[in-house]
Image 1 (tube, rainbow, N blue to C red):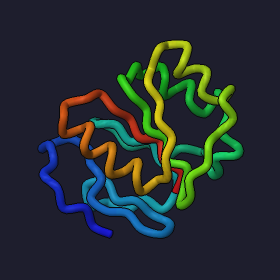
Image 2: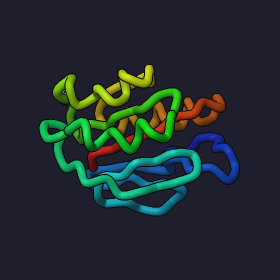
Image 3: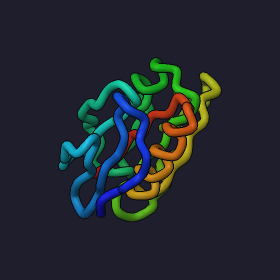
Image 4: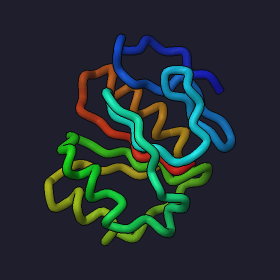
Length: 121
């Protein structure tokens, strides 16, 4: 599915998603990624059931206002202990399926929020 929405120029935004991929600025990614306004990096997490605190620690160090965790095609919630690095720094975290995380990220980005999407693809 393509996302047609006004986007902030020069910032990373989701332009589409579908089974097994997400698109950031029309560039397709077929594996898990962490996306912020100014960077896109591979993320080694392949399943929400295997998410560990170490997987979010580097994200927490970036000090975003909120982190959206996309759990994959279906909603799944991680072990609460895996989110401890975010909670310790009072960083908001929301878990949703990956497609919902893409849409929510774009809305928050367009509002000028400091948001990061960590997506399992």
